[in-house]
Image (cartoon, rainbow, N blue to C red; front, side):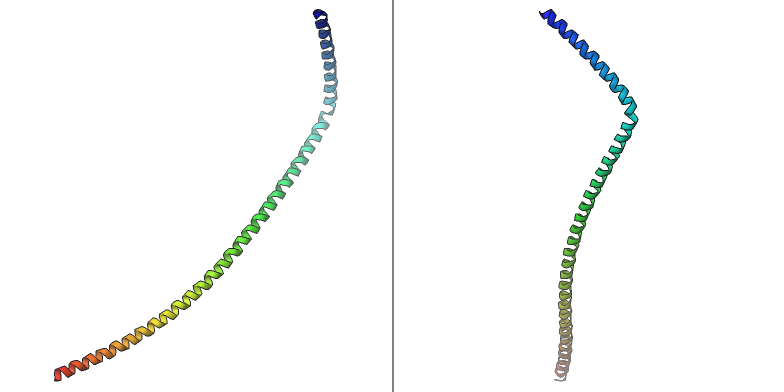
Length: 132
């Protein structure tokens, strides 16, 4: 029984291989007739797929660049606002410093006048001491 089954299996395998070989021959013949057309169609399809992928990539890049541009604009607006605040503070500090400088100049002038008066007094007192 085992031998019969093996013989049947071998025959079936051989018929299947022959059928497969004929089918492959037919396929090869059909492929050789259509290879050029198929290659062109595949090239066109690949080109289209590549173009679609490129377009998608460019869209993503454009969206990304647009988002980055918005972020940069927002950052610049914040920095500009901060710079305006710092400038206003600097102007206020400069005004305060100028006022303090004017006050210091007035105080120096007053001190100089006081020193001049004191020096005149001292000279007068020295003169009086010499006379006495």
